[in-house]
Amino acid sequence: MNHNFKPGDLALVISSGEEELIGKTVEVLEVLLDSQKEYEAYGCIHEGDADGSPSAFVDFGGANDVWLFSQKNLMPLRGDFQPERQKESEVPA
Image (tube, rainbow, N blue to C red; front, top):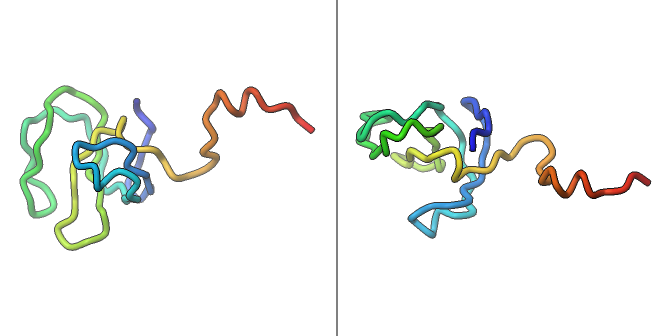
C-alpha cells in the first residue's frame, strides 16, 4: 500500500520482523521504489528487497537509527486516521 509519504512525515511502524520496532513513531527521510538489494545511505548499508515496492528511509530518532521500510509496514500519522470503513458507517448527528 502506498500512503504517499513525503520527507518529514511522521509514521507508526505497524509491522516489522523486529517486534520491538512495532508501535514506534518514525520520521520519513526519503521515499523510493525498492529497486536494489542493497543501499548505501545515511552512513550505513541497508538491505532492500528489489521488488519495486514503495519504500522509505525512516529515522527512529537515535544516532545511526535509520532503517529502510516498505510503506505497507507504516501507518501515516497525519490528518484523520480513522479507517475509511469506520468513517462510512458513522451516521451524522
